Length: 116
Length: 117
Image 1 (cartoon, rainbow over the protein chains, first blue to last red):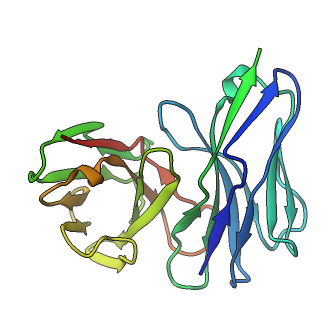
Image 2: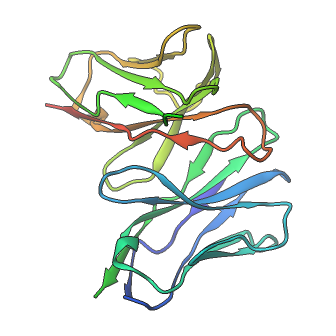
C-alpha cells in the first residue's frame, strides 16, 4: 500500500524567513511522482511543485524548492522569503504509475501561518 | 482553455435526500478522478473513470455512492440517502491521458462543498 505522512500539523514562519515542511512516503513502485499542493481558504488545490522520482535533481519553482531523498523516502518543501500570501494548508501527494491507476495519495496536511 | 468545472459549488441536503455533483473536465481530458476531503483532513481518492468506464472504484463506499462519466456530458458523483457523515468537500480532477509521463498530472476543480442537515 502507498502512504504519505506529514508529521507537522501546523507550522509558523516570520515573513521573509525560510520554512521547511516535512513529508515522508512509502511505495513499492519504481516509477512515481511527488507533489506539493497549496490549499488556501478558498479550498482550491493549487499545484506548487512536482518531482519525478527518476530525476535526481531537486525541483525548484521560484521561492519553492524540494529536498528529495529517494532512499529515505523523504520529500520536504522549502519556502524561502515567506510572504503573507503563502499562508495556507499544504498537502504532500504521491502518484504511482505502474499499478494501472494513477490516483493521488495525499498526506493529512500542514497548516502554515505566516507572521507579519 | 477553461479549467475543471464543478457545480454546484455549495450544496445543502437534508438527511435522506440525494446529492448529485457534476464535474466537467478540461477540454481534451478523458480521465476523471473524484476525491473527498472531510473537515481538517487531506483529500482521499474515491473513484477513477474514463469515458463510459469505471477504472478504479476502490475508494468508493460500498453503498449509496455511485459515479459515472458518460460519452457526452459531465461526470456525475451521486450520493443517495445522504447522512451527516457525507458532509465534506468533493473534488474532481482531470488529466489528458493515463500514465506517468509529463503532462499527465491531474488538474483539480474548485470542489463542491456538501452540507447535510
